[in-house]
Length: 370
Ligand SMILES: NC(=O)c1ccc[n+]([C@@H]2O[C@H](COP(=O)([O-])OP(=O)(O)OC[C@H]3O[C@@H](n4cnc5c(N)ncnc54)[C@H](OP(=O)(O)O)[C@@H]3O)[C@@H](O)[C@H]2O)c1
Image (cartoon, rainbow, N blue to C red):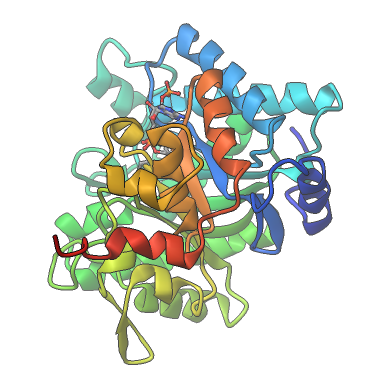
């Protein structure tokens, strides 16, 4: 197990090693973090994909990307294990220090072990029910569990997979899934229990901070069932952790095709309606944007207005990533990459400063009258 965690000094030293990436490193949670993070969600649960991720992660971590995003269930734990292998190798080779990188993972979904077993139901019963990790009634939607017992088990599993004593950011994965079936009051009770547990995990040195990683929850309208209120979540964190609570990060999809984080005023902070991105900073929350390329769909065929707004970039993928990392309020644009070639292409964006607000706003201007 690697000891330690990301630190202000370690990440600043890392940033200094990449003078060719101006504007890439920005302050986040007291660290210097690259504006592009590598995600590890997509891909088959097989050895070939493990190898591809090993190469891509190595290219990223040695090329100027010092935030890695994963989840225990991504490729049935294989993504976490691959990250653990690469981190151990790079640290052993003296090419990376633990203190230089921010590692984020998530728990909430039931996961198999490396692949789908022959009899998934029996496997689940043996590994989760008979062991007492999941009780009947805990499971929502057949796959999501948000109890301290389950999250605690997943957290320790993630630490073992990643080979890390301390995970820098630990997210509750898509908590809004539970709102599809639970009344809000019961949902908030479960969130409170989890946040209390995670405050304990911080005290025990198992995690640095915690947060929520979402899909619909922070983009939804307040009238929708799965909507999440940041104000409410922060209030719960304060109740269980005091003013110095560690609920400090959110993750939500944000890209050219899903811009609600910056266009929809679905949060209320201090009695005022505001967007999720505008709400996050005053609430002390770091923001990681997921699905920057809409799972690859934005890597080609973008309209001309995008290349006109973001000049000097060679590919549509680079422009789509530039949109995300330049959005005011976004700390890190997460890009899923299992190809080292894509890592190199993406790093060309990091070599440019983020777009100015003026350049960014060109995307939202009406075209001139003919
Ligand atoms: N609810 C949640 O918590 C949630 C949901 C979704 C995503 N996430 C996180 O966000 C990360 C990013 O999202 P994502 O992986 O779903 O999708 P994404 O980043 O929008 O797109 C990934 C796809 O784009 C391709 N790609 C990457 N760089 C490229 C480039 N320079 N040129 C052309 N294609 C390129 C990748 O190909 P290769 O893989 O072949 O390189 C992959 O197929 C995830 O990996 C995960 O860590 C979290």
